[in-house]
Length: 103
Image (cartoon, rainbow, N blue to C red; front, side, top):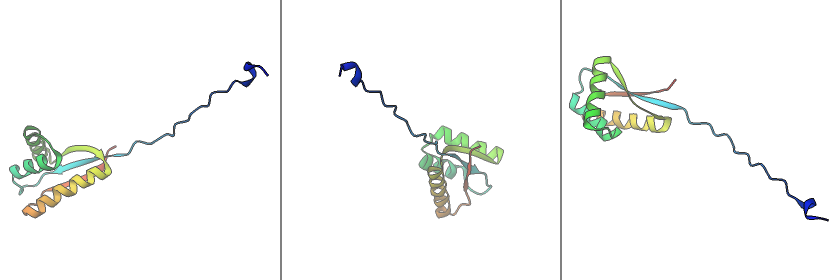
């Protein structure tokens, strides 16, 4: 047997196709009772937004009726929205954040 007869064929490695997780939007809904300062504080605390960005998001929701805060995976979106809603409830404000699938 010669060296040429014992050659090995290269094995092809197949990578499994992994689907990207579906993304969800966290939406700030406007209300006429929650103070603007409280909304900005919640956005800074829960979503780690700067003071300037928090102010702009709050004003957009105030003028337009709602505003998308962040787009992320479902678990993160639901956790952040629940955390913000719980903070508002503890403070006695009707602030609402909702989640919905991104299209």
